[in-house]
Image 1 (spheres, rainbow, N blue to C red):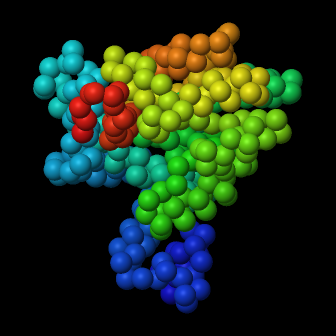
Image 2 (image 1 turned 180 degrees about the vertical axis):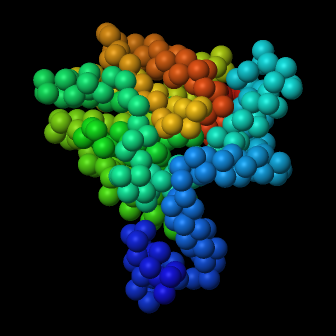
Length: 314
C-alpha cells in the first residue's frame, strides 16, 4: 500500500498493468520513500546529512567521480593537485546536499521553502514582462538547480525546457514535479513551443552549458577549453526579440537559504555573429561558476563532444 501511495503521489500510473510495478524498480521507490521522510527534517539537518552523503560518494570509485576529476583538471590547471582534491571534496558535498534539494524541489510544501529565497533583480524581470517584452533567463547547471527553479517559480511565470531522463521512473517523477510547479514544460527540441511561450508572456529558463552534440552547436572556449556549445539562446532571442537575463543561484554558506542573482539584460544581444554570442554567454556563465565552483555540477560531461581530430577526454 505504501509503495502504491508513493507512486500515486509522484504522478505515476498505478494500474495493475503498469510496468513500474516490476521488482527491478522497487529499490528506486524505497529511495523515494526515504527521501520523502527525510525532507520532513529541519532544513539545516538536511544540509548536514547531504554533506555526509556527498563525502561518501566522493570516496567511491565511479564514472561520476572520474568525470569530476577530469573536468577539474581541464578547467583549473592553475590549481595544485591538493587544491583540486579539496575542491572535489567540497563539490561532492554539494552534490550530496543537492539530492536533498531535489527532493525539496519535487515534494516540499511552499510553506517549508518560501523563506529560503534571497533574490536580487526579480523586479527587472517583472518590469520587462509588464512592458510586454519576451524574457529569457540563462543560467548554468549548479547543484542547486531543482530547488532554485522551484523557488523562482513562486515569483515568476516560469516555463522550462528539459531533457528526458533515461530512467523511466525518474522521468515520471521529474515530469510530474515539473508539470506541478511550472507554467509550461517543454523538451529542448520544441522550437515552436518555446516561441509560443515567449510570445504569451512566460519567462523561459535555459541552462546554456549543455553539450548536445555537434548539430546546432559551435565550438567556443569554456574555461579555456573548446566546448560544443548550443546556439539555442541567441537563436531564440533573435526570433522572439527577447531580452536575455543571466541568472545565478548559490547555496548560502550559513545555511539560511539561497541567493538568486538576476543580472541586467545583456545589451546588444544577439549580434549578427552567433559564435561571438555564445562565447559571450560562456564567459558570463564561467564568471558565475568561478564565484562558487564547488556548487557547479562538475559530474556533467561538458566536454564529451570534441572537435574533429581531437581525442575523447572522458
